Each structure stands twice: as structure tokens, then as C-alpha cells.
Length: 478
Image (spheres, rainbow, N blue to C red):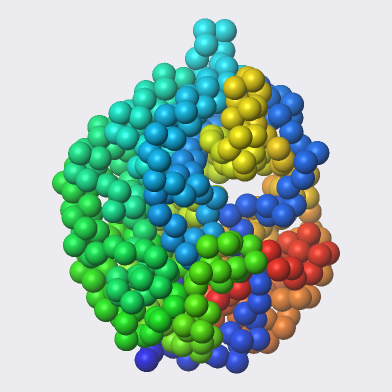
């Protein structure tokens, strides 16, 4: 099979350039996904509620927009592959007390950012409900959350922002879709992973293509502007042939975006993965074959490779933002929104506000106790230094643009790029010899084979990773 990868102009690349097996084997080590920098292992307990409160007050009158993330932790069944922070339960009544906690936390955050009239002036241009399964909440509970958010925050018009939700099609009917549109959401992401019944049984995610297509069609009928479908390669019993059938179905569905995730088998970190039969997991070679075939097929179907594991149609906002150099990356992945402050709400959520990361308590009882006591449930975080901001921006542009223009960083941060990053650029020499990157006097470009290994390229600029060397808390890059 011949693989191709699209650049900004959607040109195609040969499979020999992209899938050099020796090069992939050489560089396929564990590394961060860089949804944040510094990465979560650098967060520490020295940052707490007082720091968060002071930061919220300090940024209250900033001009930059806001992004809100709301974490709904509940799922009614456990998918064995999942590494998310979740609470598996069929007791839907547990949503009611959690709703009250969310409303209280929303008020507490908004109070710190409000002016003398009690209004938060900063515009909310992005909202994301994640989980868990956000639609574990009832339709009325979703209405209540959004009513509270709109009461306390200043939302832009629906057609001017990205307001999204993650959906399990098994937990979503037409009434749910109608209510989600009614409360102002305009984007939806659906988990599929694989339609093969043997694979679904092995990972405890039984989901028919009929119910998935039903929700997708209902969302389109109710005016949702962008639909994303998540797929996963490397699951037990997958082969190129079986996954090709799933790809045929997805391409026929024609979602605006497709995320093709690598299954990271880390049973020492995620207990549900211990239920997966390791003997049924594809070999590294078969996994590469699945990835190669999938990229080839998606590009032939007209999708553009955005980066990491994301594909989008040429007309999609992600594609356009990348072409214009306006693509960003945050905890939800690639985004078209500017690098705005992100406020995390709910148990275990992470925010990025005023140059710092703040994470809420992971245990429900501890989270509830603090929120009920009118305290912020922050238990750890990280305040970025000037050096962190520089390296964060370098890694961001690499992940989004596949290129760096040294002069941009020199003018913004007052550095001599080549001197400042001499060690990192030296580390890239070997990648240059292996045709992963092209190094120039005034910048660098990531070459075709390097795009699949973009995490490796970014890692040479990660100051903390270079000090710590490779750890076990990250997944393999391929």
C-alpha cells in the first residue's frame, strides 16, 4: 500500500517517504502529546486555591477571550481502552448532586472575575463539555448548566464561537440533540473507535453503525456546524482488513473531522485496560500497517492531515486555520481559537489561566467538600516562567505549523534562537540526517516523514523532558 500525507496545499507524499519502518522503529519511543507545556507531570501541590483565586482576579479585565471546559465524569459502562478520568455508574441520580456542585463552582469562579455590577466582561468564544459522558446529564440538567453559564459569563453569538460536546451515540436520542442545539451548542464529537463486533466485544463498547449514523444525521438536521468522529487503532483483534471496513463506513458518513488515535496500552496506569487480552493486541508491525492504510485511505477520500492524529475536510475551520498560521493546541486537541485563558470546571478538570495551570481534585468526595465550603478545589498546578512561555510557544508552532521561523521568536522574546536552543538544534542533527527535518539558518521545516513523528521533534525543545529523560508516564508516539 502507498501512503500519502497532505501539507498545507494538500499535495500528496509517497509512502516510502512517510513509512520508513526502520526510522519509525528508531524513533517510536514514549513522549508527551503536548496538549500543554509544561506537561501535567510537572504540576505540583505548591500551587493551590489561593494562587487560582488571585489569578482569576488579576485577569478579570483582560481583553483576551475565554474558553470554558466542563467535566462530566460519569459513564454508565466502562470501555476497557479508556484512560479518561471517569466514574462508572448506572445510578443516574448521582448527576443531581454533581450538578449542584458545578453550579456552585461556576458562581465561585465568576464572582472572582466579576466587575462592580457582578458581570464578567471577557467574551467566551469556546466551550467544551467533556467526560466521561456529558449526556449522562438529563436534558433539563444540561439546560440548567448552560443557563447558569450564560447568566454568569459573556458568551459571543452562537455563530461566532466553538461550543462543543463529546457524545456517546448510545446515550443520545433526537430529543437530546434538539436540546443541545437549543442551549447553544454547535459542534459535536462522537466516539466510535471501531465498528467490528469482535473488536467491540473485546473492549466492551457495543455500538452499531446505525445508531451512530442516526445521531450524526440528527445533529446535522439540527444545525450542528462541525462533526468529529474518534477512531482508534491498535485495539485487540484489529487487522488492516477489519479496520478498512470501519473506514469505509466512516468515509460514507462524511464527518467534517476525524481523529485517529493510537491505543496506548498502559494497564499499570489505567485499571480497565487490565481486562484487555494482551495476546489479541495487534503486533507493532500490524499496527503500523493499519496506520499506513488508514492515512492513505483518508487522504484519498479528500481529508487533510492536520497533525498528530487529526484529519479534516479542506473546507473545515481547522484546515483553514492551519493554512493561515492560526491553529492552536490545548487540552481538547487542535483548535481554531486564539490562545485564550481556559477555565476548567468540575472534578479533575484542568485550566490554563493567566500563565498558569490549575487542576481540580480528582476524587469526588474531596472535590465536593471544598466546593461546598466555598473554596476552590484546586490541588495542584504550575506557574510558567518566561522560559516556559518561550518553549511553550516553540512547541505550539511546531505542532500546528510543522515549521519554525526563528526571527519571530527572536523579536518576541529577545533571544538569539540558535544560541538559546543550541542543545536542541544539535539533537535535531540526527533527525536531519534521517530526513525528518530540514535545518536552515533562519528556521526549520518538518519534512514528510517527520510529521508522523512531530512529538519527537517537539521533545528536543522540552527542557524538563531533557533533564528527566524518557519516563513511563507517556504513550508511544506511534
